[in-house]
Image (cartoon, rainbow, N blue to C red):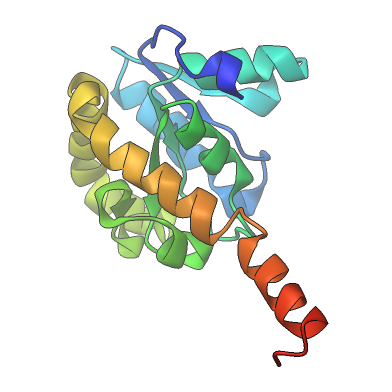
Length: 169
């Protein structure tokens, strides 16, 4: 993804997930209606090649998630690699993988009703990320480094294998 890392950023908020009920795309669509100053894009609603998707990922300032189900979170990791800010709920795999800077309270999007109650807080957070993008880059580098080292690396696996091979169990 290195080729997409230094792309000029646009005021794009990206939904990189499957369009499925557990991903709550209706929340994303409602935010789009509330924040017309930004472009909201649901990647799966476009017929994108892999290169076109990565270009979109590289141009976006923000990835938004309201997921109720997530197994690993590859898309937000890829986004972080190309300096796209993740905004994720403090639940699922995000709970242990995300740093505080990029998580929001899980209750804000636990349901559509809960979202409606917390909508103004979510909007405030999106506006901060989008309008103050540069100030979030240093924590984003920390986030990417943490994900790369702790969750998307085979170093611990290799160390365990090497211990076994060397008789150090």
